[in-house]
Image 1: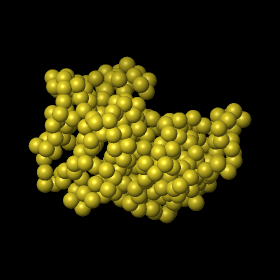
Image 2 (image 1 turned 180 degrees about the horizontal axis):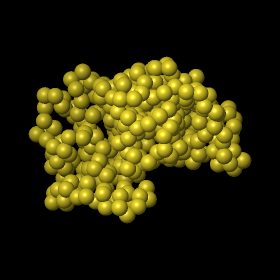
Image 3 (image 1 turned 120 degrees about the vertical axis):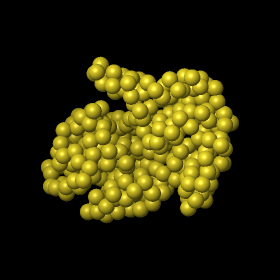
Length: 334
């Protein structure tokens, strides 16, 4: 099969298109012929080695975390899927490799694809959908009438999280550029801040939750200050915390590293009687199945900026790295 691989951690080196043996599904795995793969900033961060301390992948490896496709074979212990099923997944850590023609996926990480959307649209959903779900539903249990500030509303997570937060009954504020104001309003945003011309701290006060996705330390501090007493900030970009280290089973010395990295922001949050949490989403087929129901009922619609052919996977990665994507970028493999 054809696949795009990372030959070594590098900022400059591109993914290499190569020919590899088709994977074999183990007893709890499903072999999927991939139709389309979502492209995420995480793919670039893995390629550059930014997560090698916490996710020490051995190179060479196939890149890619999101996919939609058709089941070809199932392992002997697989109960939920059969050959011919259309499925989608954010595959598990250490099992990545969706920039390829086939992949073997753990049954627990898979869900049936929503019937009312295309393979390309389905491939755009898993990582951003699960991130939003694990922040808004699993971690916070967002309630009707609560106020949430979702940064970068026109991005992949933002476009999904706005729709999910509105479905849960929240008041949603977001930031975006002038060109994307109408897009985020159409998704349900109640208050839109043009980040190039307006200061969100001057407009927002007493929020229950911030979904934080900006790497600027000043933005992080300002985000804490707009929370009400007892409010929560969930960061998708860090710094990582000891709680995160414990969740993924890191050794003691890396727990110590995360404690040092996060101590400053945790102190600031405590001083304001708020809380800080770092969220690194995980693969979860059961949650994805609940997302399928929301998509099929019309509550959430995928937002795709651009679809690239498989051969142009490196161009798709470069486009995502510009930070100007509206919704998601997808590569069409089949």
